[in-house]
Amino acid sequence: MKMTKGRFSLMNQASSTKLQLTMKIFLMLTKMRWGLMLNPKHMIQCTYSPVIPVTCLAISSDSTLALTGSKDGSVHTVNITTGKVVRSLVSHTDSIECIEFAPSPPWAATGSMDQKLIIWDLQHSSPRSTCDHEEGVTWFGTSRYLITDSADGKVRVWDSLSSDSVRTFSGHLNVLPSISVSANRDFLVSVSLDGTARVFDIAEFQ
Image (cartoon, rainbow, N blue to C red; front, side, top):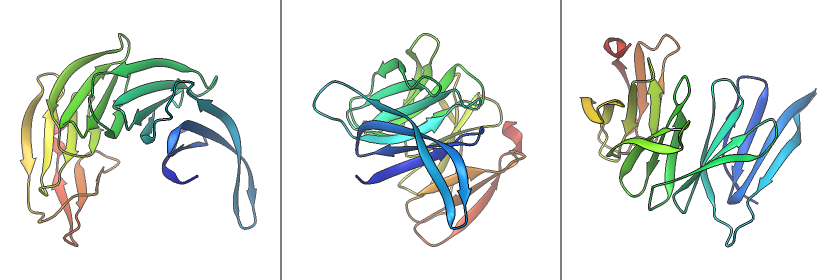
């Protein structure tokens, strides 16, 4: 079975998503001479049919929850310790392409092929606000601001409280497959299919 994406947690665990609504969470038990031996800790298999592909995954900052996005637009929160699905979030109408927890609960963000970026209140399992979606999504600074990358080569900063786009960074000439925020949260690095990488100053959004 082809694996589509994986994430490391902050507590020495790793997780992976596969081309069906199955999620395996691995506990690193043994470091061997030629690499890491990964033993499965949990497998979560949803019971409804047909089997829906899982497209993306995120892990909470305290490594207690995993958030999965699916091709049918559904989002599921999973307890990593028990392996149980604790809530399902339904609002998108097309495939979830990016997903991220806020630095602190109870917020999360999902981006979909339905061109929507939804900010979720996980405590109440409901959308808090909806923005026009671009591509990938990343929280940074405080939980108030998010970043989206886009097919038009632009990076946009969003205010999660007002759902407004507050800043646009440009310069790339092609799709942005990846963005990342520096450890001190002062800089944003973006890479593009135009063969360039750019660094933007985002200290004002701390």
